[in-house]
Image (cartoon, rainbow, N blue to C red; front, side, top):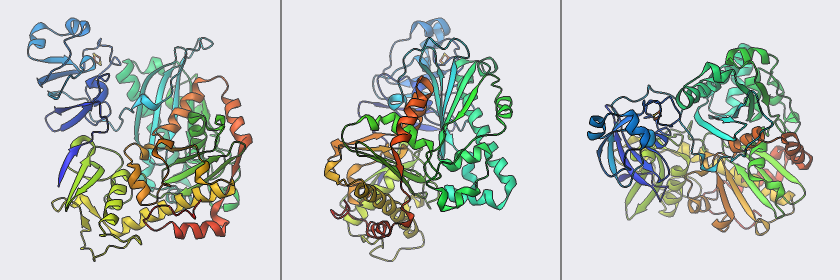
Amino acid sequence: MMNTPDSDQTDSIVLTVRSADHTLRLPLSADTSVRQALDTTELRVRAACGGMGSCGACLIQIVSGEFNPPTLAERQKLLPEDLAIGMRLACQLHGRGAGELYLDNPAPHSEWKSLDTSQLYRAGTNNTIDQYIYGIAVDLGTTHIRLSLWNRQTGRRIGTRYSINPQVAHGADVLTRLSVEQQAADENKLIGEEARKAIIAGIRDILSRDMGEVSTILAEIGSVLIVGNTAMLMLICGNDTASLHQPENWQLPIPCQPNDIDAWRKHWRMPHAEITIVQPLAGFIGSDLLADLIATNIIDQPLPVVLADFGTNTEIAIWDGQTLWTTSVPGGPAFEGVGMRNGLTAENGAICKVSKSDNNWHLQTIGGTIARGFCASGFIDAMALLVEAKLLKPSGRFAEPQPPNGYLLDSGNLHSAIFASDVDIFQRAKGSTAAAMAQLLTLAGLTLSHIDTLWICGSFGQHLDLHSAFKVGLLPSIDPDRIRILANASLAGCEKMLLTTDRDFQLNTILERARTINLGGLLDYENRFVDNLRLQPWSTDNA
Ligand code: FES
């Protein structure tokens, strides 16, 4: 058994970065600076200028390897004797091959990391905005909060951040969090405030590191746009969530509006910000799905399209050219890694890919560090391989009774163990997702052969091996060329709405075509769910 670095970026080199208490394997593509790459990890350099080379804070030392020659900014900021011993500015530094760096004085620990922006929105200039030019897009997810700060006038994204939603402490999934809120009404306010505090902490992290100013820029923010699932939006607004417990409301529009918006502005120190909650489609379908649909332009497509946003709630939409069929099903913690015995989000140390040769398991972790658990993609690989090796039956039962420590893929690492209870959680999540997709296809009068594109949204898709997903029946076995992955689709759609002048038109166009389906009462769905629990490829009877 061995751990290898996450090498998804095939065109990238891998650097080793050390500090007093960290060693990190850092994939680095040619157009990414060392600072940008480190900003996606927990080992960040100090910074206060957004990588312009003007603050001089992001010092790092070359130990070995070949890098670009010092830039003009570095020659102005650093003494010749510093350059002679390999001191460089991380924001100016690009690798040209494997190498090693030492970071003597990292930034203080932060929960916030930067996102890969390659799949986010690209905006043009907008000269109609001449004051309060900054805007913020927020995707308030059940497990993570993702946000970005924009100069709306120039169409420049200043920074992105993501972190765990602190509300996770009140329950990994939506229902648990809502039941906490129901048990103690005061919790409602508290849970909402936690999300609000987290959002402003993320914004401040961008401002301090990427602009070097906080208070003055906060006062120049003119717009904050928030998308999320209905429950998270109601909680952040401090709305009574009792209606979400009643199935008759699941298909109805549910208003999510804060009644203390001035207090938000005061708390966030943004006196001029228009704070907008993009209204959810229904009680069980949030505005995060609307943002996905806007990011992917689905309803502009002439041919049928399926979109699935995997998460603690998996939201699914099928566009048949005229009607947008939408639903959501509980994914539980299986697709977000939170709540399983060895579950992790896609973070350093998470097993993101698993392969097997003869009797040897090969575990690939994000960051190439010691395995600390599985993120969804690694778990799905493991499921597919265990079934293929007949160690796990398609029913989800292990062929042999398992020891209390679970089935270990690495005998020396307890975090590599798979438990029967985790398999069961995964089966339920994938069973409900596959059944929901099949049911919507039937309602739309479509079969898989009609589908032009299958969009996989959510960070779940980032490391997903499609063939493993096919083998365990999570996804229909269609031509991989027809599958497109957009990891941060909800944030990308929120950004697009923040930057465009016809947001209402875009939203209304979707709402007019949307039809929400509550699968709960359909006998067909129950049968499909049971059929899809087995760890095997989609049956042709599905659709
Ligand atoms: S000089 Fe590198 S971030 Fe400021």
